[in-house]
Image 1 (spheres, rainbow, N blue to C red):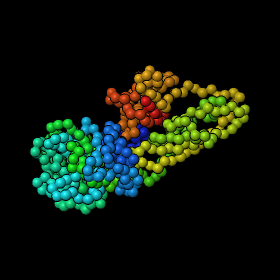
Image 2: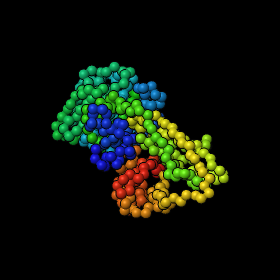
Image 3: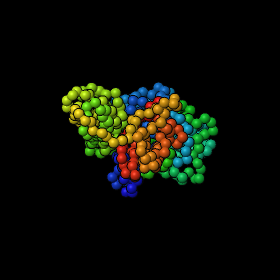
Image 4: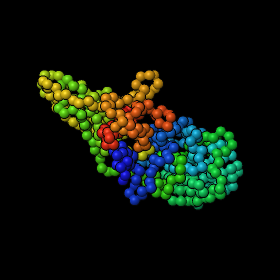
Length: 432
């Protein structure tokens, strides 16, 4: 492991539980993710694109594990979920979807489970019954490579209704691959043609075809879309399920001052082996108005020594991938009645929230009390572990953008280095 990976290990731990499955070093289910729909109560996209779905008619029902309101049922008439096709018109891609048919299509018809395209061309996964000149039967795809030029890739028979199936289509530079429950059903050469998306307005639809017809009578769940071909190990990981480590997450509350003198403001933060994203602080039984990994508490000058009891519950955002269980940590602070308060040396003042909304107030994440900016390095990570801001020298504060665009509201992890050594780590909140 090189020095860069060593330095960033703490910040990346919160994604590493699904980046590598034992024996499969090539599994990285976050790379190239352009659509991520767990359907846990809504059609929100948990990929970096945040391409949320618009639900028409489909109803939330239990998923394949029995979790309530965690999959969508489509009535086979006019139910559909529509997403933006802007980043999905690709030549290399992977669609992964779980589906449970409620029945079987009538002869010479098909139910489209997912479709990206327009008139006379799309890329899709469907359940067929002697569809398209009787070529397609069972789970299939008939992806287009031009007008009236589509492939015929299909199961040998129609699978029984009422069961869950994992369906994956992969397109690389040469072939289409179609998987059902982790097994390759067929491989078709693209014969040098690129994926074709029709001749009119492109739409991306779940539960029906891009023209809103050929709707599915099925339950659909856990859709993952990628801008690259996944390998067999990655497909197996999606089929079998990515497991969180059985070891519980550990953490502690860390303070910068020792001893604490009555009347001072104390800065506390959570340090754990997996960065949380939702924090609920309690001080002496009172809930605090703070939701980040850091907390500032004013102490009382009572004229005598006393103790403060602090606890924080750490939870995790919903995600396409399984998250650890919430955990709670506590700390007792000794507050001293200092007749001669201890002088502290200059310390960094690191805000835990800023609002880059362009109103001229708190528009950047500025670190104060920086004595030697050239010695200070900054790294900021999104919830996928990607570095979205990097500065070898603290030359300017972060303005909340990544690749020229403002990042979504939420919590972001940071690391601060002094002379190349990790000085501080924590999280900050971006709010609009």
